[in-house]
Each structure stands twice: as structure tokens, then as C-alpha cells.
Length: 256
Image 1 (cartoon, one colour):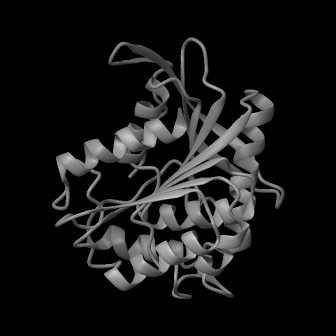
Image 2 (cartoon, helix red, strand yellow):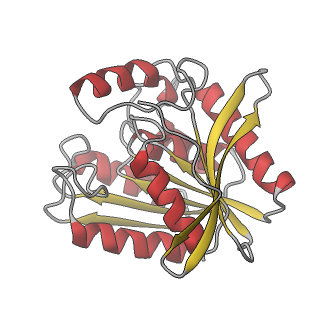
């Protein structure tokens, strides 16, 4: 599905935000599109990169970009599938979209993802002069966010139900599991998981917790009892309003 460029000005709550589609140059010569939103007034010193889930920069991802921008931040959601998919399109949240998303995820290399995040960071700090960059990632994007935090000078990272961290099941987590890169994390990390996540069991959560503790990473790991994977999105079977509201409060507190 194709998303159209948004209107320049949008009011969310009491805040006017400016929204646009931009292109971010990447060192391999490709141009990565991104959905960007920022407050019409003063911008907070922390810029934010939102790493999309399996389905790309869909309406859910754009809505969280808008919500964080309404809190005063400059926010961009890059299209990390830009090397292999038509930019400006996102996948349906159904079985066909899931299959297509996994096919694209398995083409996204660790080196490519890190280069993409670095390019987005450069855009935020040079074009818009934010002082530091934070990352918020959902599901596959949560994995990407953890990887970036271990590889780049990310000041604050929110990982929402990021999977495959202790495994080598996807290219982002190869050659060694991404969890083994935890010593490289220099910023704060907030991990938010559902206690009934069918993809991330208690053993994986304990391994994530142990890696963060043993490497003395400043972190918080929150597990919501009875909550499933992908609990953040309204209108989906796993949506949990209480967990979503608490998670959003914690994300905004991390970014403040």
C-alpha cells in the first residue's frame, strides 16, 4: 500500500507539528526515504529515530512519529527496506504482508541497517542541529534499535518487544547474536515486553536482562503480565490499552 505525502501542518492535541517526506543519503549511494515530523515551535535537543516493525512505515508507525513530535521532538522513521522495496509503500497487517515482510527482513543486513541509522543520525544532527539522538524500535525494529545502540553513539534506546536478540535467526543478528554486542551500549536502554509474548519467552527475557546487568548498562526492563507481542497498536488483536499507555509514558520520560 502506498502512503501519500502528509500535509505540511497538522495539529495533534495542543501542538502544531510539521510533517514531510524526506530523503536521507546513505554512503552506499542509495537514497533512503523517511517520514519526518517536528513541532512547529521549539525543538527539543533530543532527536528521535523510529525503527519500523515488519510492515514498514505504515500508519501505526507514522502515528507514533507524530505523537513523539507533539511532545517536542524532531522525529524520523526511515524506510529500512529501501534497498529492496519500492519506497513510500508499506505492507498490510495480514498473512501476505507478514510473508512479504519476512522476505524483506531477511534481506536487511547488519551492515546495511547500521549504515542507515548512522545516515539518519547525520541528517538529524547536521540538517536540524539536534544535540543527541535516541532510537525507538518496534518488534523487528526493536531488534534493530538494540543493534544500533550497541554499534553507534545512541543516547537513549527504547526496545519494544524486539525479538531474535539471543539468536542468529535473522541477518541483523549475524554472525554473532546481537545480544553479544551488549558491551558496546553506552546510552540508556528501556525494554518493554509482554509477559505472554509467543515469540519471546521467559528464557529470552532473562538472557536479555542478564546481558544488560552484567555489562552494567543503565537500563529498565518492563514485562507486562498477560500481554502479548505487538501490544502497542490500537485496532489489532494484541492491543492492550493499559500497557500501551504505560509504555508511552516511559518512552516520553526516557526522551525528556
